[in-house]
Structures are given as C-alpha cells and as structure tokens.
Amino acid sequence: MGLSVENLCGLLIRSRLHTPEGVKACYQRWQASAQDRASVKAFTRWLIENKYVTEYQATLLANGYADNFFLGSYKILDRIGKGRMAGVYKAVHPSGQMVAIKVLPPSKASDPPTLARFQREAQLATQLVHHCVVRTFHHGESNGLHYLVMEHLEGDTLEALLKQRGKLPPREAVRIAFLVCLGLQHIHEKGMVHRDMKPGNIMLCPFPGPQDSTLKSLVKILDIGLGKNLFDPKSKEARSDLTGEGAIIGTPDYLAPEQARDARTVDIRADLYSLGCVLYHMLAGQPPFVEQNPVRLVLRHATETPKPITDLKADAPEELNRILTCFLAKDPNQRFESPLKAAEALKGFLGADAEAARAKAESRELQNYLESLKQSASAPAGETTISEPVAVQFPVPAQTAARTAKPPPSRAALVKKRREKLTRSAPQASPKSTTPRARAVAEARGSEPPIINVEIVDLGQLRASPLGLPIPRDLFMLLAGAIGGAVAVLGVVSAVWILALLLTSGSAR
View 1 (cartoon, helix red, strand yellow):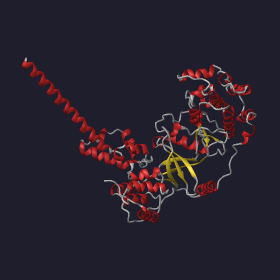
View 2 (tube, helix red, strand yellow; view 1 turned 90 degrees about the vertical axis):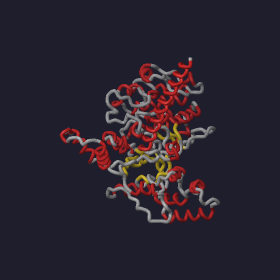
View 3 (cartoon, one colour; view 1 turned 90 degrees about the horizontal axis):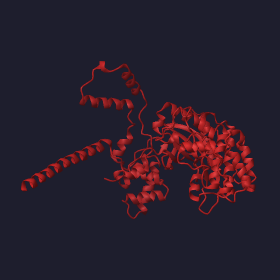
View 4 (cartoon, one colour; view 1 turned 180 degrees about the horizontal axis):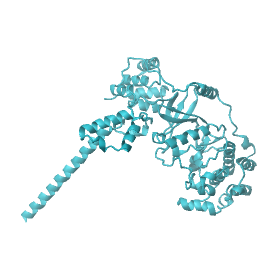
C-alpha cells in the first residue's frame, strides 16, 4: 500500500526539515489550492515547486525515508557526487552558508590508519585560505560518521571543458595556468605538495557556456591530499603506506619523472611539471605523451621530449614554447624554482586579464558561518542534537515509525542474536574448543561501537530497486532459492520427457 498525502506530511515532520506547525500550514495551503487533494505525486511536485523540499529530499520522503536529512548541524539538500565518488552532498548551515560535504565511507573509517590519515590531511587542508584553492572549513564526526566540510562551488572541472572544446586559445590556457600557479604558491608556502595536478582537479566557476570564454571564471585547485582514494568506497589505495617505497601517486598522463621514482621526496617543482602537462593539454588538445600502457607512459615522461607546442598549435607564441620547456624539464633544477616564478613568466601574456580573478569579499553568510565555527570550536565537546518532534495529527506509516524510533543495534547485540540463532540450529560447541585468540577476537568485537548505516540513500539505487524500496536480504535469498529449485525441477522433468520420447520412437520403429 502506497503512502497518502497525510503519511507524507507525517514523514516530513519526522525528518525535521520543517516544524510541525510549518507542515500543518503547508498541508492546509495544499488542501485549499489542490485540484486532486489525494494525489501524492502532485503533492510532492507542489512541495518541490514551492521550495518546501528539494527534489532529493522529496524522493527520499516519497520512498518512506525520514532519516539522514541532517549531518550534525548541516541540512542535506542534494547529492552532488558523480561517478564512483560516493558521499558528496550539498548542504546548508543554520547561518545560511551553503557548503559541500564529503563523507568518509564507513569501510574507510573503520580502518584506523585511514581514519588517522583523513584527520591529519583534513587538518592540513583547513590551513589553506586562498581564492585559487578550494576552501576546507572543518572536519567533524556525527553518530560515527566522519565528514569534511568544504566550500560549495557552482561550476565544473577543466577536464569537462577540454572534453567539450578539445583545446583552448593561448590566452585562456595561459590565464588558467597563471591562476593555478598562484594557488600552488600558497600551497607551497604552507609546506605542502599537491602531487596530483590534472584537469580533473582544476575547477572553473562559473563554468563557461558553449560560446563563452573562461576569461571571467574563477579557478580553484581541488583535492589537496584528500583525493578520490579516500572518499571512493571502492578504492583500495587509501592505506597508511600509500606514500611508501614503490607506490605511485598521481595520474600518469601528468606525472613528473621524479614522482614516478619516489613520491615521498618530491617538492613543489613536481606540481609545476604536472601543471606544464596540463598547459600543454589545453593548448594541444592532448597531454605531452599519449600512451595506453601506463608503464611506457611513465618511461616516456622520464626519457623523451614532447613535440614543440608550436608544431601542434600554429597560433602559439614561440616564447610560450620556451616557458613550456621550462615547466617540462626532466631535471627539477631546470624548472621554475617556485610557482611564483612561473606565474611571473606567464603574466606577460595576459595583461589586464592577470588581474581578472581577484578574491571576492566574504559574504555576510560566510562571515556568520566562520564566526559560528569559532564559537563551536571554543564550546565544550559534544554533538549537536535535534529534539524529537511533538505529536501531530499526520500519521506516519507504522513500518517507518518503528524503523526510526529505535536506535541501530550495537554490534554486540547483533553478535549475541546471531549466536542464539546458531545455537538453536546447531549443537553447542565445547568451551575447550575455543582458542584464546578466538575468545580475544570475540571480546574485542563485543566492545566495538554500534553499527550505524551512515550512508545517505543513493537515489539511483532507489529508482533501480523494485517498487522503489530495497529488497530485504532474507526475502532475496528465499526468492533466489525458490527460483533455483524451480529451475532444477524443470530440468529433471524436461530430461524425463525427452527420454520418454526417445524410447517411444525407438519402440515404434
């Protein structure tokens, strides 16, 4: 049985997106203006159009979900992660400041070295405050969920632009490289190295239209240390020995030779080599070397000289080719000694455009938000709690109410329940058969924190599931067993039938 409009209002109250009084006023307004008052679909569309909820929130509510709309004090508005990058959300702070929140997957947070790396690199990222570097405000933890709060940007990456346009005019390409140099200089002054400069880690805000240039876009460097290998739940690269001997960090198309040999010893000049590869790509429409085999690609970066940019782009000035040669020198000592020196070399091509992307003044919302962060940092430790909504006349589906009313079971409770189930179905093992190591593991598991399903629901999974709801595991296994049994019986019957036909035809002859 589907949800009714009244059920949806009950879920809206339980979600805490609006106060009970606000939901009641919204319901009365709907009743007064709607042609079909009982249509949940029309009511959901009306809620979105009148900005009571976002499309993301409405989809979750319509599928019976009333949880996970808040992360600490942040209200989740939308899921903005793309591709394999899970857990990236647009959210709003009570001060009105829009932010982007990256959620550390639970599988990564459960690994102590990975969690320690996340906390260490998040702390470093908060020190970067520059208009050409995406800003990290703070990192936090709520109900066992670790997250990173960052500046929310409206735009897209240079990688997307190059896929759209192929190559850029020299003036646009040089301006982007110039602004990236300014951001890298700030990173360098803080004692950091990016190690993965590539078009996918350079963002343009706003993203230009098909007929527009990038000359008015802000340029932001993304993922300083906190890259996809931490936040992608399928990545296996987020280990504590990531920078150990033999580990290659970076993207082979833009990788400095010394970084391929030993990423632990590189300095900012490795980032300048990678930026030179990005500049080459913007001008030529392809990286300096095009190779499918990553090993051969790394070897070519170490031993070969790319074609002069003037051979691939006729309108590229000869002086720009000289600057690119300095960026792409195999020996770090022959490159620009700092991003600031590289920026000064590029500035001569820009003129007035070099001053076109200055930092904007902080908005009132951002000022209030930063002040609230200072106050919360000085306040006693403790998580933000939200009071339970008061009783209202809108009914909540019984299944949803039961699911959200009780906290998630602890791991110890789940282990105990599993043991009781096994005890009923199998003979009790002798206490002597339990080794000291097994007892230690069981005791450690019993003391672990509660298991919490912290991943906010993926709308793609909802739409792909039957009736918009996930199939319980037990029901799935029952259905799979029934189908498998039916197929087996059908196979036996078919074999007997074919054998009977063969015997019948033989006797007829």
